Image 1 (cartoon, rainbow, N blue to C red):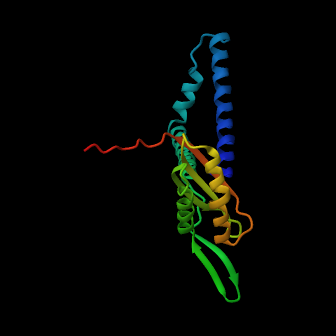
Image 2 (image 1 turned 30 degrees about the vertical axis):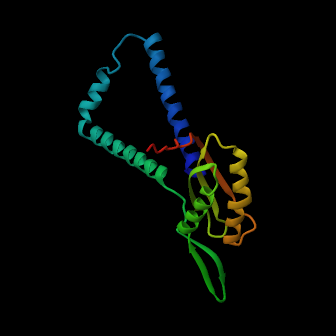
Image 3 (image 1 turned 120 degrees about the horizontal axis):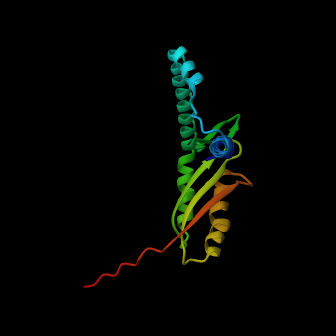
Length: 188
């Protein structure tokens, strides 16, 4: 999820939360302090009786609108900013492009070369001129973190900068610690 989607989620959830808290507070106040009359009185029933087909069409249209907004939100959650192609050079002699997936696979393999890493995955994201790398790393919880950070700073990121011919490539690594796999013994 990118920053824009995250910001939209926070605002949307905050507004829905405020609306629900206000409605809940009003309902609680009416139940505790208000008269003990039914919520739906004769005037409300008369309104629905007079405007019966139009009111229900409006309720249906509003429900469809809410469903479409919810569907758009769900689709935005699954969207990834991963690049498919990455332009390295553009000059009079031609254009040099690489497959971002191949580069991401190479970066993940470079990370997995560390003995502290159990599994790694990478994505190249961002605009064409300023690529960024996002790493998801499953590291051995028994291995020292200095091994992993040293491998990233001394091997993986310099190799990536050399491959992309860039002085600076922003990187974000999400590291989860997992137990080391059980060693298997063969008994004969």
